[in-house]
Image (cartoon, rainbow, N blue to C red; front, top):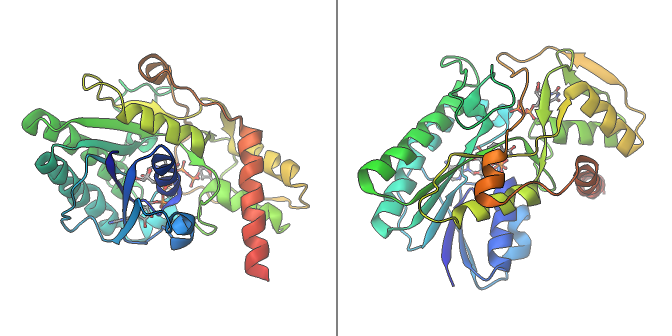
Length: 315
Ligand code: NAD
Ligand code: UDP
């Protein structure tokens, strides 16, 4: 039995990861400061004797004994990561240093949850891991984009300098049950708006594209990456290459929910990437991984989740 630390374990992706690692027979330590995560996400795991939760902020050092570390702590929604930009940078820099230091001391394997945001507003399309990106260092998204870029640099430097056994995954837009209702990301916003017959807020003209990956596929990829041999460290893109303009995504949600909602155009936020689509050939080759859940299938599960949640709140 491996003992595995998941930072950000009560968040959206983190909670699914904890659940899967427990189901595979591991012992899991979830560390979270509950900024964007919630106890509700992990409530069903609390009775499992092999699951442990520590309320802790990774910008402070942590002493635990584990074999593997999945470093997922960091708010991921633009609204949340911009709420306290300096804290977002501290989480990515000080937090990542602390977790890498822990991995070094324990000789534990370390996996960094990086992001497609390291490519910024990409000029190469689709994005390959070899692309260095097009990132504004002083904009409102920079605390996250540049924070995650430094986190990748730190991860590589702990590997080169201290021989830490590392892995880097670059996650593209991921969605599914347990996204926070109010987190401002497009999937949760549109579904919550549609279910309440409110207008769907499309930023800009909606021609910008994203590629959406269902959470179970992402978790599969992350675990496969952790379990690869030491000679493959990444970075590797994990995402679903099916690309869709945001306006079409809005129309799709209206159709799937059977909503009476209309579309309301709002101002495009600064530095919003125009296009995003992962090239996943490296993941296919090295991990034998590709997404298996189609967009409509994943959206139906997500819609069902938000529907239950909204009805529960209304009661
Ligand atoms: P989330 O906001 O639901 O989860 C983040 C978790 O980290 C939350 O539980 C939060 O409370 C916790 N956290 C934040 N700062 C912390 C700190 N200083 N100390 C301890 N805990 C802290 O977001 P998510 O979508 O689940 O994203 C998880 C990870 O995956 C993040 O690192 C994010 O950057 C990365 N990622 C996600 C996506 C996506 O589309 N969901 C895309 C790219 C990268
Ligand atoms: N978006 C939108 N309406 C919303 C929320 C987001 O049109 O209510 C757009 C946003 O401008 C971006 C895309 O949807 O182009 C994805 O936004 P999200 O915040 O989910 O993640 P990002 O990929 O930008 O980090």
